[in-house]
Image 1: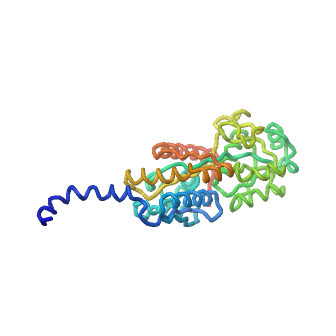
Image 2: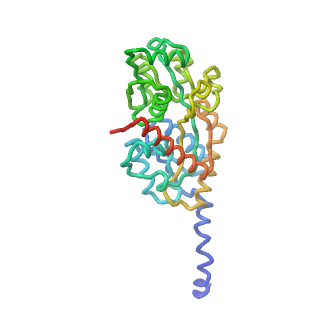
Length: 323
């Protein structure tokens, strides 16, 4: 083509290049940042997604763990990445919402500094008790025990500001009970403290606590889902027991750097959604107690902002602070 003709054609050719690149995504390796340690729920889900995405696209999809500051370290790494779809993030409710409510000096903004692609999964929390340490069979019995004069009750959580911590804070506010918070570094030691009777009660994710319920080592009292779970059909919801606005899920979200082009975001969403809905991944996550959500970006954004506002109200009412 003559140089003059080529220059004249460039304005027509150039706009098509980004669209073509987005349609071809991925053309090289993709990294999913998980801002928590290996073995966390975010990590387990991300690795299942990555394997399915790699199988579908034929390109390497790897998970990189960047723990620290309740997700802040990993989130900031994603924010600094190019918005080309090759650095993504899978993270829990704390990174996407609770940090905003709990940490006034948070060094990132998950509303404005991340491209929000989808809520991936959710799981309710279950109020469980060590029945040897807290002799009750239902919520009325638990409340009567907690309200007894001179009672010194305590509960374990996976950490200050975690979903299970704030769920218990909601419970305390709703029931007017006084329970001492004993935070741990993760759900496993929090559950161990409950099993050993070091604490008397705890809210824990359905999937992680189910084996201990099945073995009879803890007693479930209520579940925070909208309806009873097929895994625990005998356990009532908070609403059934008279607790208003007590539907709580520990959820996970998927996103990327700020300003991802809409066409690219749509492509990434489609590939990730197909991975989550694939039979092997869906079966594995359901077995672990997760509901597959796969929301659209606009729905995820609205949901996330609603969650931030909700947890801000709980944090203010409870005057909760973290170091």
